[in-house]
Each structure stands twice: as structure tokens, then as C-alpha cells.
Image 1 (cartoon, rainbow, N blue to C red):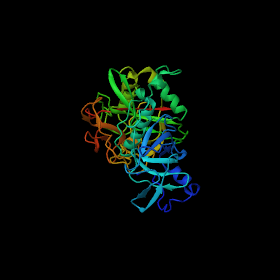
Image 2 (image 1 turned 180 degrees about the vertical axis):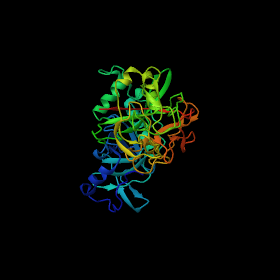
Image 3 (image 1 turned 90 degrees about the vertical axis):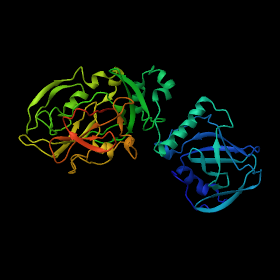
Image 4 (image 1 turned 60 degrees about the vertical axis):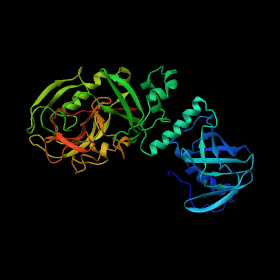
Amino acid sequence: MLNQPPRGISNYDEPLNENFATIEDKMQYKATCTYDGTNNVYVLGLLNIPPAHVDELPAKLPDTFTAVARFPNDYVEGAKIRIGGTDFAPKYATFAAGDTLVVAFNQPEKVCFFSSSKKTMEAESVTYSNAQYPLLDNAKRGLDELLALADIYNRIYAGVDLAIKFAAEIAAVPYSGDVWAWIKARIQAANFTGIYIGDYIPFTAGGNTIKAEVAGIDTYYNYGDTAVGHHIDFISRDCWPDTHVFNKANYNNGTTVSPYPWLASDLYAWLNSLAMDVPNATTATPALVSVDYSTTGVYDKLPTALKAVIVTKRLLLPSRYTAGSLLTDENNWSWANAGKIWIPSEVEVYGMEHWGSKNGFSGGGFQQYPIFATNMKRVKGAGEGGVRSHWWSLSADSGNSTHCANVSYSGGANHLSASSTNIYVPVCFRISA
């Protein structure tokens, strides 16, 4: 369980002011309640969040949130009740009508401890339910928020459509229904309340449905040669429905256009709807061919409102280029703009390199995105809801000049020749302050 209160509170008569402030600060969320003297019920009132957890929980849940915490059915007013836990000896306490308590939770269906004005303790077998009292709409959202937190902790959170969850907020002035203007304003205010990793904003581009998932919130905050501000990085749940080569030839070095394999690639040009020269041979300082994706690339197909808020992602990018030589590893790195549409590196997906170089240049400038941590969300479909597919990562292979890393349809770390034609890509972009 997260943030359990300190063990060893052995005397239920301990004064509140000696221990409660410390314990309260460690709890995920809390509520005041008063025993009503009937039906053995404690009615919960205002629910709010300790300051120590504003980075991981909503700043405040609705004032109208109502639920109940119930003691064992045989409890009568004034009787002693066993208060205990698995790691310390049981204690006993009595309660009377009108007693005010603070109840603290660290998962949605269990009370971890409670305190009266004279006692602080951990409670055993106390649960709450919303079934005994009708909930207003915003109160129901408050309960949903708590349940979502449990799913996040258990790594099973499926995410929700932010355009629906915050429909009223988005519909209001000044956004007037523009979900992208709304999310940018939220980011500018560093107000991420109610937004979680895995939540998404759906949109249509080129006739294709895309679910842009929140992959990281401030994952790169304060990073860079110029410090990155508050931001959200989005990575689509599934891939763009068309495949594309990394390069037209089996070549993973930079070129005279750019020393960075990513920025020299045909894939970069296509995703960002650019006209540029890309490698078209496998030799040192390869021949180049001109491409023009200005009207056929992915960026060109994005909604105008989305393009208005996307910013260029800046990275400490690995470079692999020496004129007249064919390199099999990165030989430098430096700060560079990685494009408005990009793909994650191996480190950003797995938290480490598998096929990329191990000399530091390849992975030292990246951070794993939370959406990929301790799960298999890296398995993506070919188009929204499509069959599992291979998809490219940004990293060039170590030990050869022909391959690039990709995520296998099965979720494994893989690598394929750069001109492979059956590989997809997710749509990835950043919105920042």
C-alpha cells in the first residue's frame, strides 16, 4: 500500500498534536466525518488532499462528495472497538455520537487510519461505500477520481477521454470547445489536476482516428540547453495506419544534411511533412535523393487547432557521421531540434538501450516515459484498434550501419534493416507552456 502511516502508535490515548500532523501529511487523501449515533455510521464530508501530494492527486475533490465508513454491525455507542493492523498489537477505543474524526485513505476502499480529537490510530476492517447516500454528479466524479488512482497504482488504468471528462470546462469561454487550446492553457498554468498518464484526447487526421495518450507530464521539465518548461508529451495509443521506411536504403548514419541519423532520415521528413534530401545508398557519404512530403506527410494532415499548439521537441541527440566513413556507432551528441512530430528512442520506451549504442551518446539524453514503465503499453496496433504491429524507434543500431531499432508487434525490443517496408509509427508530439 502507498504511504502507510508510521507503525508503532501503541497507545490510543496519545494526544493528537504529537503525531497526527506527521501522519496526515503522509496519507493520500482524507476526510472529516462525524459519528451520527445511529446505524453505526460515520458520514464523510469534505474530501481534500494533503499538500505533499498535490503532484500526484487532484488539488481538491468536490465539496459535495458523500460516502460512509461503517463499523462492525454489532458496534454500539460507547462500546470498545478493536483498532489494529498486521504489524502491531491491537488497541481499543470508544466513540460517542457527535465525535469528530479524520479518516484517511491510501486506496479507495479501505480506511488506513482514523483519529478523534484525542486519539490517532490505524483502523482495521473499516470500509466505505457510496451506496447508502445519493451522490450528485460532481460527487460521483470525485469517487471516480479515487477509483482511477487505485487503477494507476495497480498499473491497470485504461485512461479516459479528456474531451469528455472536462467537457464543461472546454466548452466555456475562452476555449469555446477547442480542446487543444484548453490543454495548452492547463499546461501553461501547470494545472494538471485530474489529468493522468494514459488519459487521451481523440482526433481525426487524414480520415484516421488517433487517440493521443498522455505519455508523460513534465517528463523533461527543466531539461536542456534552454530549460524545458511545463509540458505534456503525447504518444498515440496505436500507430498511424500507413507504414514507412526509416530510410530508402539500408543506412543508419547521418548525412551532409544532418549528422544525426534521425534528422537525416526519410522517416523524419515524412512525419514532419518536409521537403529535403535523404540517403539513397548504403555507402559512406551516400548519394542523396530529394523527397517532398509537404502535402503527403503526417504533420500536414493534423487538425489546424492541434498544429497551433504543438512545439518542437529539443533533445541531446546522438550523431553518427564522419565524411568518407561508414560508422557503426554514434561518435558524438549535441543539442538539436527533433521535430514537431517525433518517435521515442529505446530509452524513452524501455528505460534502457537494447540494440542502440552503449557508449553513452545514444541514450544519455533521454528519459523513459511513464506510460511505458512496468507494463506492455508499447504494444501498438496498425491504426486505431488494429492488429499488433512493429513500430520504429528513433535509435540506430550499434555494431552495423544498416539497421534501426524498433518495437516488435509482440512487445519485444527488436531491430530491422532501415529500408524495411512493413513498420509503423505512433504519432508523437509535445504541447508546452
